[in-house]
Image (cartoon, rainbow, N blue to C red; front, side, top):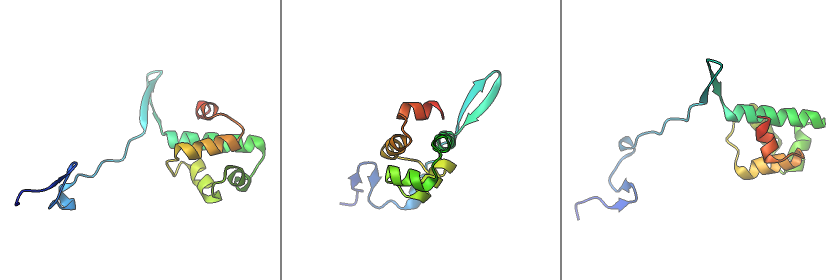
Length: 107
């Protein structure tokens, strides 16, 4: 039994040096009017969340309470510092009294 044992794509006996690091996904680039525009969805979604929160006139603490998320997570969302789950986006959209489609439409 000298041959490696397969566990999916991982083989026993491999070290971490054998595994290539997956590069971080780059922001999407769109050509608009002859210019290349870089879009980072995390940041634009965060800006939309902050804008909607401001329109309601509520602080981050209130949005956190309404959504059931931690205030520091709301801050990270607004800064585009986290990759939110679908569940988190649904909670925030409900707390902001908008649909997910409306929230992404404003991003």
